[in-house]
Image 1: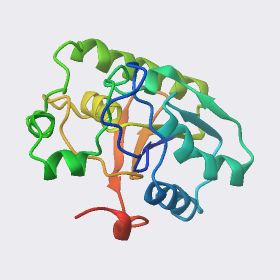
Image 2: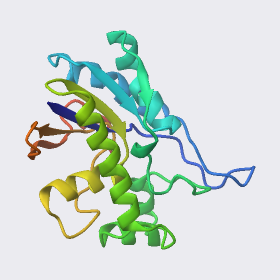
Image 3: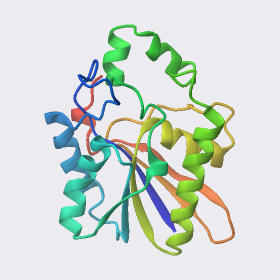
Image 4: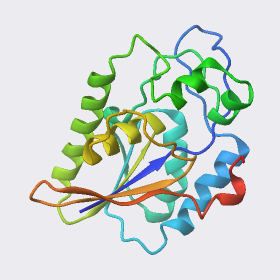
Length: 201
């Protein structure tokens, strides 16, 4: 089968939630444009199933494709990001521009929250993705997720030492081939041609 891992499109910034609970931002105007571009990027693919992280930014990224295909969009909690309990969300380009310590942590391949168990996070993502592989032999499933989660799975199948080993762009595609005998391989990494003009430089 083939997995298509989609990083969510650009969300709005949330410096701190009013309620003190986790930030769950929806897409920005540019993010919605990026989400619509996925229709063109996946136009030639026969898609059998759609799954999303519970986060609003992932669910909204999936909406245009789900509407076009008429497929149900199923929520998979294991595709959630390591920062799902954080009370803020700042787009990575803004972290970089502001020289934020969280940006430097990402560059160093570290999670932004020392209280998150990196090994547990990675195993949760891997278990979730592998359960979907088992559910769809010989098919193609599109999974809407997050930078850290996509890193966690691809790091495992490629044997990377660092959990965060590359930087998926907003609304990017990463394709994984998953065979019935357990082999996993990268088909493509961080496809961005469909949104190149909508990404910050």
